[in-house]
Length: 310
Image 1: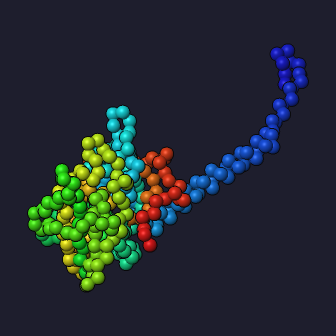
Image 2: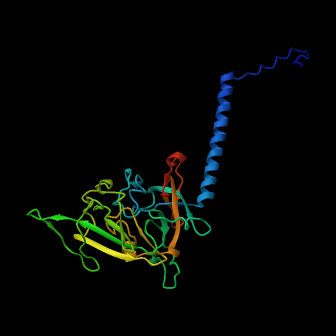
Image 3: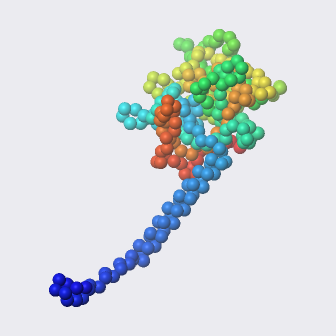
């Protein structure tokens, strides 16, 4: 190259290419492979969930506590506190269970219905006299207890001790009536559920007891929401009817289900829940609650909560 005086000068040699150490190359290759495999695995899992179960869902409310929303969180001024069985309605900002279900027609969930399944449903009160669904009615999530053709007897108990140490009982108004003594087959938290088919009676074993429900302030389980005395009611299911109950059975305050709403017709059942795969935050969008993604609250596939009992 010519300098300002028109003479040629030696050009500097180009810098030598700096090579990465061998260990760094190996590290980068491993990182690229890990990210690629991880991304493909996540995509494959999401595809599998959507194809197999066809619909995501989130759990709004505490009627299925402690099975669902067991360690959910509610947003407060001081941050978040655990959701408990005394929370009666969720608001925007709650962290709730999120999972996958089979819903609608064209899936095999109806053919595989069995006792203890967790179903997504409407109630009879959600429909008008012509069978049309009222607008803005929310779907519910409950446990399947009674199958078509069965008779369901539900009893709930509160024993009181008088000043002399004697058990005292009070009888509720009709259609409630006195039933037999409290036994190990049921407890104040879950009551006693008997399935009657012909002359055969089967008592369903409780899934939960009072120890599974936390104390909340002055409301100490099982005192909250109970009427005095021992109470019973029966329902005879038709060939197209199912009996559903929530797992949080302290009172109708906590699980509004077939004990108050009556049996559910087949056409009112919308789907069946299979998996809880994550937690998500409830947010309000366009006037409706939606579940916003939470990266730090995703479960790994080996940690999914399986809701199908068979």
